[in-house]
Amino acid sequence: MSYPVILMLTATAFVAGLVDSVAGGGGLIQIPALMLAGLPPQTVLGTSKCTMTLGTSVAVVTFWRKGEIYFPIVAIGIAFTLIGGILGGKLVMMLPQAIVGKIMIGLLPVGLLALLIKRPRIVAEPTLKPIDKWVKIPVISSLLGLYDGFFGPGTGSFLVMGFYMFLHRDLLESTANAKVFNLVSNIGALGVFLMNGRVLFHLALPMAAASMSGNYLGSRLAIKKGQGLIRGCLFGVLILLMVTLVVRFI
Image 1 (cartoon, helix red, strand yellow):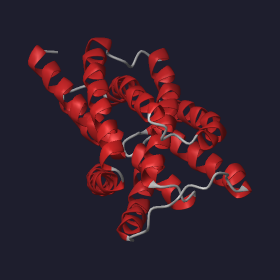
Image 2 (spheres, helix red, strand yellow; image 1 turned 30 degrees about the horizontal axis):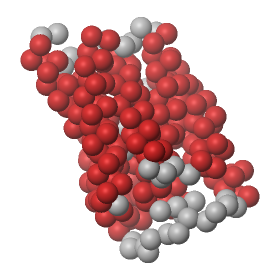
Image 3 (cartoon, one colour; image 1 turned 60 degrees about the vertical axis):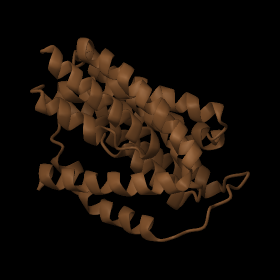
Image 4 (cartoon, helix red, strand yellow; image 1 turned 90 degrees about the horizontal axis):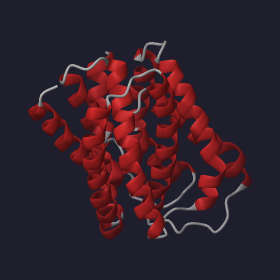
């Protein structure tokens, strides 16, 4: 692969990391760029997972240091997300992605409509309800961990919406929590791709460095600008995801 192509993909990874740390959906930028570079689909996913895993870790640390992560949610859902990511990575090695894509196309308008409804800033409750602990968090983290390992783009956006709509957390906290779950599912899927030799390190490492820089800048912007920035970015990313999935799967 030529140096100009590597440089272009590295710049793309920076932008993807910045977008991903604010609202999720960085894979919408990164995966098409890797596909245009002529890589096989599974290698695209493996290389992207390596890049996004390292980049997301920076956003997680930034949100953690600012006290925006709500650890009771993380503690309950982290194992479900890891298992989902591993299973998703295994499925993508043997199943077509068209079915999952069509399901996501059907769900996206619902998410977009929910974001259009103005809601006051939610004050996070100090404790979770039993239905949150035993039903909502396991279901959200398992399904989206599976989706992240299987395909990936938009996982962060769906996690933010899940925590915001179903657990009634505010958008900044939901974004911070989503980064933790995104990191865990990425790690699970990355392990599968590594074992199958689907990661190009000479490409993934410079892209990861750029992604880490983008995630650092984006997470600080999200903390500083708050819910208004997150809502706008999330809405834009979801529209882009819907267009991408329609073109790809219909």
